[in-house]
Length: 358
Image 1 (spheres, one colour):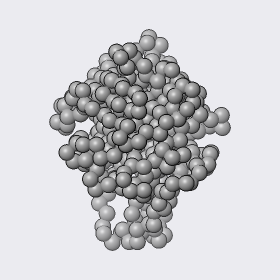
Image 2: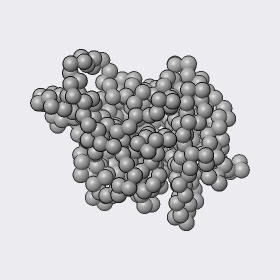
Image 3: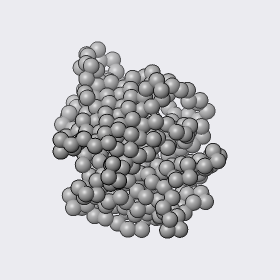
Image 4: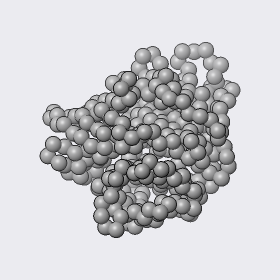
C-alpha cells in the first residue's frame, strides 16, 4: 500500500508510446514467502513499487514538539526492459522530507526525483542504503538507521536506534490490500525507534531527540478499481505497544478494505481483520492551497482499542506533485484513550485531493 504509494511518473517527462515497448513482467506478491534479513531490508528492483518511510516525533532541547517524515520511493516503470541505453530509466527514485513545526504553522517540505545510476541515485539490494545526491537513508552494521536530508529550508541529520524487534505486517509479512489475494504487498515495520540527532535551520543547529516508526513495503499490484485512497496510522504507544491500522476507501468515502497489526507490550501480536478497523472523522480541516477537506482528527476502533487521534497542527498537507505526483495529508498525531495521552504517531490521508493513481 503506502505507505508510500506513488505515481510512476516524472513530472514533465512526457513519454512517447513507442518508448514503452515491452512492459516488464512484475513478480506477484504471494502468501507463504519467508522474509529474510538483512537481504529484505534492501531494494527489490523487480517489483513495481517500493518505499522506505520513517516518521516520528522530535523534541528540541527547549522541549518544543516537532514532527518529521523522511521517505524514499523506488519505481520500476513500464519502459522497454530490452533498451540497452545507459540512460533508459530502468529504476526511478523519489524522496520526500517534511517537518511539522507548530510555530511555523504549516508543513515545511522538500522533494527530489532521479533515475537510478551514474553515481547520483541508488537503492542497494543488500541492505537499506538508498540515496539521491546528498539525501540518504542507510542501515548501519549496528542495525541503526542514519538519515541525512539537507533540504531547502532545513537539514535533518538523525540516527534511529531500534529498541524493539521487527513487526511483520499481515501474515508474516504478506499484507492484503483488497479482497483479491493478489492485491497485497510485502510489508514490515520497525516501531519504537529511539531518535537522536540535529536539526539545522536559519543557520542555527540544535540537538533533537524522540521516537520514530519505519515502514518498508514493496509490491507489484495496483489498488483495486473501487479504491480512491486510504487512511493509515503508525502508532508508538507509551506502554511499548505498537499499532498499524489502515482502511482503503471507495469513491463515496466508505471503507472498501482494512486491516492492521497490534503488538501488545507483552509481545503478543494480533492481526486485525477488515471488520476490526474503522476510522471515523471527528473534525475536518480545509487546505487554503488546494481546497481539499481532510479529517485531521479521527476516532479509531482497532481491535479492542478505541482511540482519539489529534493532530500536532492542522496544516500538514504535503504537495509532492514535483516528485511522486500526489497531494495528501500526512502528519504527527497524538493518541488519547479515555481523555489520556497514550501514544504518538503519524496519520496519512490519501485520495482526498483526487483519486490516488499508483
